[in-house]
Amino acid sequence: MQHVFGHRVSTAALYSRCRIYGSLARDPVCARYECRGLATAPAAAVKETPNLVQTVAHLIAKDMSDAEQLRHVRAVRDRLEHDGILKISLRFADDTSQYLKNLVLSLHRHHGHGLPITHSASQGWFWDVKPSRSGTTFQTQNHQARSETMASFPWHTDCSYEPCPPRFFALHVLHPDGYGGGTLSVMNVKRLGQLLSVNARDALSRPDYRIRIPTEFIKQPEQRHIVGSILAGLHPSQSQSPIVRFRGELVTPLNEAAATALAELKRLLRELETQPASTLHLAATEMPRNSIILLDNRRWLHARDAVKDPARHLRRVRWDAVPFQAC
Ligand SMILES: O=C(O)CCC(=O)C(=O)O
Ligand SMILES: [Fe+2]
Image (cartoon, rainbow, N blue to C red; front, side, top):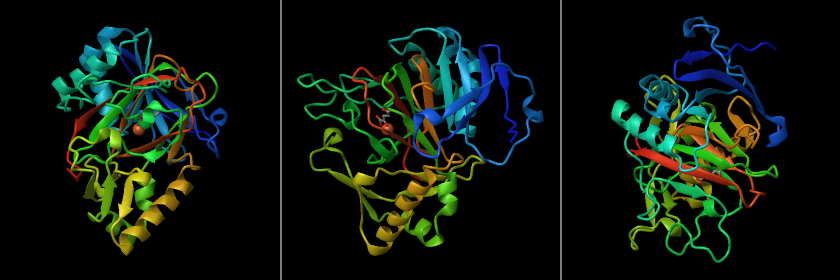
């Protein structure tokens, strides 16, 4: 089957659209990009195809200065607004994530994105997603965060337990998993929203869920959870995507309708994770060293399978924290 996909180019960047063939199972070997380097068609000439396979736009940053080039920054903003997902390949090593820092600053200066949330006084904007060795210190006081383990992460929204979860986050690959583990999967929640029954959508939109704050992120000892909804209306873009926050193990429904709706949501997640129209599996080959994935945290859920390589290392930044509600 022939799929048409868009290509764009800016002076600062080689900008292509990549198609990812999703696997039927979460098998990283079966997922691969088909990327083309150069723009060949003006955006207007690009035909939209039925959303059989989810796509990811791909931007190249040729050097550090791109993070401050207006066209480059605008291209990032546009893709985040439109698709809520973008891959950037750095054509240079950047072990201190200076490019990402400058990019987020430029999104703030030129496009009104809120600045990053600080993870802790010592960590500042960046957080190292890296298995911590026993005996080493954790990035928060005393408690090991899930991102500091080699364990798998089921589907989740980052900071789902915050009254103001960040709109965006990015992961910069410094050392991919060399042993085939640590595959990051991403799920566009648009289809999820369409498949939910009216009753479930209604229940998930009510503040009938207790969301526990993980121990390592408790800021005030007396506040160990928040109460809120899982859905918050539709995203303001044309995507018609629901705004979602979810991390299964933290959520307790507070009544029967909320429980039934949550069970339906979980069942749909299991269904959709095998469907390439909703879910992509970004194995280490798709996300090599010096690549960055940026995501709209409210329109995409993400998950990762178990890490096999103790040296796997991503750096994360989350920005533009806003109240969890439709804009
Ligand atoms: O390790 C990954 O690929 C994802 C990590 C993640 O989801 C997180 O730290 O919140
Ligand atoms: Fe996450």
